[in-house]
Image (cartoon, rainbow, N blue to C red):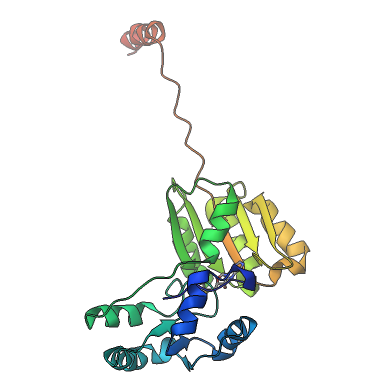
Length: 245
Ligand code: SAM
């Protein structure tokens, strides 16, 4: 399982290039996208298509190749395979067949966004893509009203504004958000704003509704506990309460 750049081709790792060079077969989502990456590094390899719809069938083929001692690499179009991308079923089938699955780590949009966020990611939830329909999306968002951790989501550019509107409704206009757009690319944008201002900013600038987006919803602000009453006040309250009818 080999991670590939999420925009900037220079983010390829030395181990990824070594794996491509020795691979007998590279399974790719879109063979043209991976072909472009390989040609940038002067590597030619046998590319086959492995997508969601043929992942199970391809897994059987991959297991046959592994049985012939072939080296098979799985990549997605960008980032880490199996993270909101095909790859998990293949890895499961290969484990099940008693063969080794080796991760060759590298870029992933969610981790890149979190690393630049300045938010505490000691613990966080990665949700992948939010539901495309508003009703279902709002139900999911409502579950994070009091979250004590931040939540990272992938979002399609044409749904961003509707999602921000739903966040304002469900989590309030003050909930802190971070928008990470086009990471590692020319128009990389990282912006922190409360949800209401983020919605207005994205609505006013159509450029923000283009490209690839990670949205991070910060943890809910800690709830203010009522101040503990001192002993004298408690005593006074007890005396007064005793006088009540
Ligand atoms: N497996 C990939 C990974 O590890 O990052 C994610 C694949 S998912 C199908 C694609 C989504 O990742 C995009 O729609 C976007 O939300 C996010 N993404 C990918 N590249 C990005 C980038 N350069 N900047 C911001 N988000 C990105």
